[in-house]
Structures are given as C-alpha cells and as structure tokens.
Amino acid sequence: ASVSRLGGIIGAYHATSLVSNSDKSLFAGKSDALRKACLAIHGTPAPGNADVSFILPVFDNFPVWFQFWDGDEEFPVNYQFLLPQNALQFIRYETVWYLIGTIRDYLEDYINIPDVLQGHRFSPFETPNK
Image (cartoon, rainbow, N blue to C red):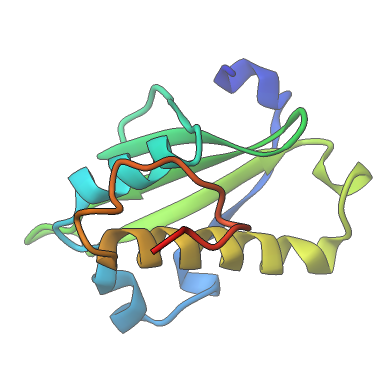
C-alpha cells in the first residue's frame, strides 16, 4: 500500500479529539513498540516526518494512515489517523470514532503485553492466544 492509494484525505483524526493528554502520554518513549505493533497488524511503513508512520490495512482496500510524534522539550506527544478521501462511502461518520478508538486501544494493548507475545502478528479484532 502506498500513501497515494489513499486518494486524498478527508481529515486528520488527531489524538486530541479522542483521548486526554494523560492518555496520549502512554505512547511517550515507545516508538519502537509502536512500530512492532503496526507491523503485527500487517502495517506498511509510510513516508513522512513522523517518528512512526504506517499504513494500516483495516478492511480490504481501506487503509488508515497512522502517524506518531514522540514528545520532546518543545512539543508534546501527538498522533493522528488519516483516512481515505472516500471513507464515508464505506463506513458511517459515527463509526470512524469507534474504528480509530479500536486501533488506538490495540496499539496501547500491544505495547503493554508481555514480550513473549510481541512479534506475533494478529488483528486488533482478534484476541491473541496467551
């Protein structure tokens, strides 16, 4: 998948609109774990200036572009999800919030699971075997 396959962006769903500042800080300093989590759900690295940038396959031919910037002394931690321009032809506007929340929860869960499970590939919509 490439960024050009997105066909344009309808909007960036920034973390600020989905979670509190304390929730965003859960990803602080965990860029490597976020990369592993994105790879575990068959994400493809994407270009950009973000510390972590992946195209995540959510549905067939429906990717979500995840970008994460780790915080520093000048800027706070931030992340965003970018959707295809024609996203609303496939899912309802209200469903976007749940979709992004599910992906965010998966990423959070993945970076906090035991090391023995990290590196295994599974979908955020499945429960990993423990």
